[in-house]
Length: 368
Image (cartoon, rainbow, N blue to C red; front, side, top):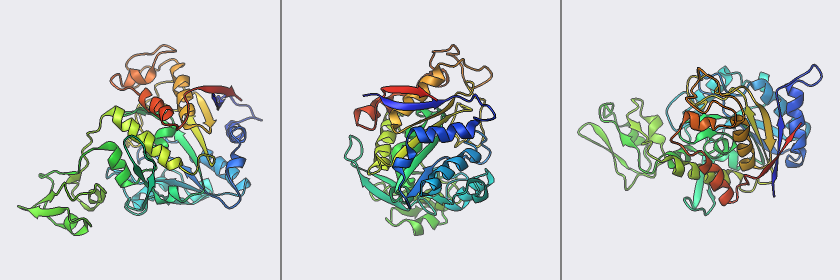
């Protein structure tokens, strides 16, 4: 059975501006039925890396927050810390970046909570029993929320081809150990040229997996559990993830994590994709490339697979823009994400999501 995906273009009038259209989308997906009075509602978004400008504007988030409040919910804006040690690698710098990017309470009307705690270790294991993972490790604040509203900026991604709702859930809600599990299938590595042998990582590691030999840190792969906390402890940046996972397996892992995020909230979740400023790379970059297609609009659904499939199709219908990351497939109907990443099969995440019951690729697009 086809899932409904509601779509609004960006055409406006004084009586029907984009805020009106956004709240109309929330009404069409029946957000009210998915938020009970006093529910703690996780509004999962990407605050944007410092220097990035393509993330969703906070003024749109405010409208979503206001609607949740109208229904008696208690919304909070949230994301989990990054695996890499950038400006969002710990809760302090993460929150500072979010506020500097405009996600202040005075603007959005909701508090900001980093779901996996100060350094990414505040998490809960969720049993899913899937092909790759039997259990996944999700940020505490996500698991213990009552409802979730995913608000994703739809764009390209250099490992999954594109990033939408599935990535916002699966990768975005994984704690530090969850992100490491998705990106890598082996333990962290020590870059000997950067290590000064200070021993801070040794003192921190709860597993006793790190030692100092010849003034250089060594990781015992048998004892290491892959929590990734040593990435942050090392002020020299000497301990790093090995970004070795293939795209197809990465996408499947991401899908399984999305299953874990939604477990118990299948009827308590809503998904929104902003198909605007469709950049070739993720908002994790400290910059934003030129859009590869003209702005398309906003879509909403209760099916995470259907909304991403519809978003891809809407993007591919557009004419490709020159002077962007798009190298081929400029004509309407041609695959724009293949035009940026010809070696990636982005369809894996949608096909696997359908295979394991996350949603369906079959959708009915309903234009407002």
